[in-house]
Image 1 (cartoon, rainbow, N blue to C red):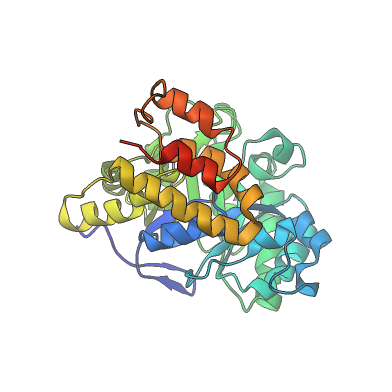
Image 2 (image 1 turned 135 degrees about the vertical axis):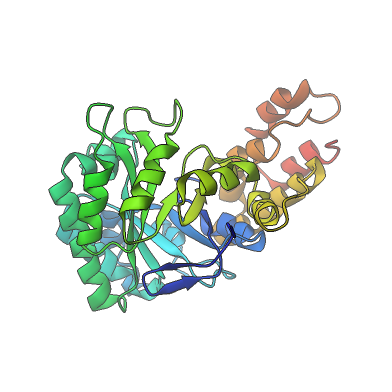
Amino acid sequence: MNLYHPVNIGSLELSGNIFLAPVAGYTGRAYRSICVDEGADFGFTELVSAESVIRGRPDMKGEEDPSPVSVLLRRADNEKCYGVQLFGAEPERMAAGAALLARWKPDVVDINGGCPVPKVIKTGAGSALMKESDNLGRVVEAVVRASREHLGGVPVTIKIRSGWDSNSINYRECARIAVEAGAAMVSLHPRTRAQGYGGKSDWSLIADLASRLPVPVTGSGDLYIPEDAERMFRETGCAAVMFARGAMGNPFIFSTTRAFLTTGSYEPPDAAQRIAMGFRHLERLAADIGERAACLEMRKHFCAYTKGSRGTQGSKGGAGLRNKLVHAASIEDYRLLLHDMP
């Protein structure tokens, strides 16, 4: 069985099936560009509020508009294709937000039906959409209409969870309604909203959904190493896998997973390669939002890039290093902290 293969999302043809998931605070265009360098076949922006798109009116501003929403929406220079993930609960507002994406020419508009964060679900969006499956269908239908009228009919997809809690496992119903409303792909993170990111994801639900839907199903949840991706493909029959937390500080996951799926082996990066990649990431982010803001944002990223390291000479191991990293405020600070990493 050839586990690494092309996948079609509606009219979009992708050469491979290893994706970067949308992750708030992490999958900005600088990081997506790094992941593309490492072989990610497709990636999504961080979740973007439809309301913020409407208020920001990105269609009325130039390509270099520095406003936060425009930075989130911008395609990376090396991205041949990418998806924008929108969240919201009101169908017409979601449609209006999607219509305003025309300037950015996304290849996919993804609807967030899985975020468990309180500030998102209190608006009825994210995983709260699964509590009102009829409204979920109306949201998908509205965004599909907006895509057809304003975006050239690019595919609309949705990412969902298994349900709100253990007493309301309704991923089958929500996925069916979404597809009937026009969704061209369903991505499933098989945890409930109540689980958040704890416990274990139930991959059997991905297998169940993949056997039922006429559109591609992408699997997410507990993917950290290439072997995890290989096992998810074999156990679930999903069309694609989507790395989320497993890609944080480890963009190499895309090249190593592709190597493992196609050759049966891979070479993991060493500490020096991970640190060098972190600086590439920092440089690209600084070019987007300026050195000061980039250095503040990179604190969490460098903690991820150095995870598992022993730290620099004189530090109290990796924990001591990361305690210093969260206070770095300039590129030079990072260089001084990381220059003698083992």
